[in-house]
Length: 239
Ligand code: UDP
Figure (cartoon, rainbow, N blue to C red):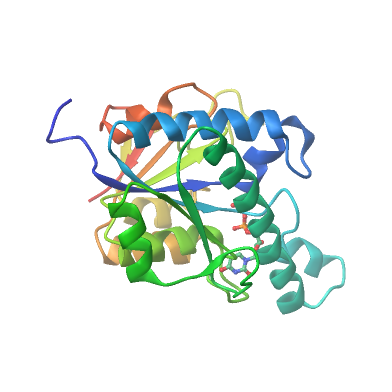
């Protein structure tokens, strides 16, 4: 292992959509099991892994708002959706023998610990995976912004942002076959070009605090381990 490139503590951001597989809605256990396997691989190699999961496979506040719901209330629905994803991933990680703790920004004592940053760090030091649920606990935020904030607070060396495509493109590769993949970008370029990788709040928080983001394809087996080893995959957003 290249000690220079090897990342000791990372924040892995998974989108809710990834959990649905092809289905679009809900959780596909086979898919979650595959993701859990990739995570277990890097935990066994000694990397400390914290995870933020989105909730797009259940509800997105902005989409419900368009259909007439109150934004804040639908955002809370979105946050509750993320917790179901956390429990699904926790289950498959524990079946693989990986100790995990779920910590949520909205307290729900029966299913998860409350978010306590110093306790999260302690779990990580003991080799447990910590999964952060319910986003920031606040409407109008995203789980990408949560990933940035949690990464900073627990002192992760990078956000590993897992996507269903190879990295950041100049246009949507799903609709434009000529879309060009970037190897590297800085945060300011992502903002200026309005590239669809994360919302502006998340990117600017990373920019202000010099936190790198590795955007890579989760569907390629072993990619989480490659990102941890600092191999050149996907797009690196850094200064
Ligand atoms: N959400 C929120 N505050 C947060 C994080 C999430 O209100 O701090 C809500 C918001 O409605 C969002 C939904 O939870 O649409 C699901 O999260 P997100 O859209 O980030 O999930 P992803 O797109 O990564 O699956």
